[in-house]
Image (cartoon, rainbow over all chains, first blue to last red; front, side, top):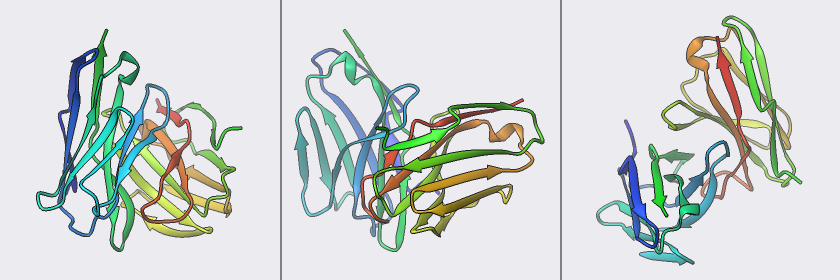
Length: 112
Length: 113
């Protein structure tokens, strides 16, 4: 059972555009929702994370929007740059389940 | 200084062999993890140790055996390697278990021929 569903699988955006990646979860005990960024040949690295006490968190050009009632959260990348081209993973953890459950990833390509 | 390091970076071996991957973190973290990333980039946790104690053991063949000699090290030994074991294996660490930032190593690319 996939507990975190991520879409789209791949995304192509023009430089300066907005990239939006969506995730949905099933486990209502989840209380920590990070996004990780992975460049080719590298390990994933934390980009931004949110907890359900807020509906939005912004760090520079990256924003997480969180909808607790819909059990959905999304990553918005404003003014997308070619250097943002990478695979993005949403994830969730919480309750008695300490493990981080990852979505299947979105390959973002930002064309110059 | 690398926060989470893994050796080797690449591992090419024959089916049936036994191999080990080593991981070290210099962040002073209590919790360490092993993940497997398959060819479709799907990241799945395999094991987690907290203060040298196994706390997460996912449905992984018992050919895979983790070992944590101390808080800073988590090794992964794989017996009787199979073709399906080919993947990238990532070690990670976090300050403590639960909703904490996990810091990933650079990965070990395992190819079983």
